[in-house]
Amino acid sequence: MKLHELRDNPGATKSRKRVGRGPGSGSGKMGGRGIKGQKSRSGVAINGYEGGQMPLYQRLPKRGFNKPNRKAFAVINLGLIQKFIDLGKIDAGSAITEDALISSGAVRRKLDGVRVLAKGEITSKVDLQVTGASKSAVEAVEKAGGTLAIVAVAAE
Image 1: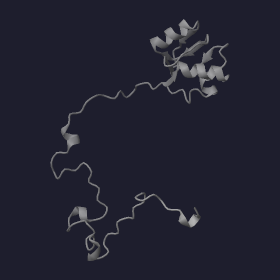
Image 2: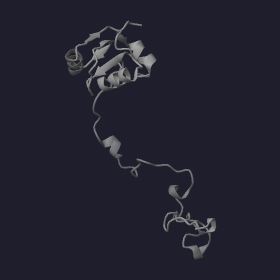
Image 3: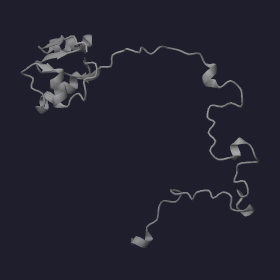
């Protein structure tokens, strides 16, 4: 095979539709846009508009509520903590605080605190001090012989 013999697979590329190029092309004159009206003009975006009928998004009832002052926690799983301990990025001998998790790169940023979840296995005996944890995460850490203390975050 030589460079001049290279071809794309048949059907892999499709030439663009050239509209408004005369009657012989099949899409000349008005370029497939019909006659007059809003949609024949350029710059029209009427998504969700149903010709004056009440649009679907307005016909459906409103549901739910977004709490304006809810807390957003940075989430970390036990399996990831164990992985970082195995890699030597976290020292299991000393207390593992939120700042230690951030400096090791396990958590990107603290947000309103760090919450530990129980996904994955933890085998090391660790002393975790975080803002929140699931019940199953606390049980898993204690089963491995460690402690998981929940410390209150300082009000700013």
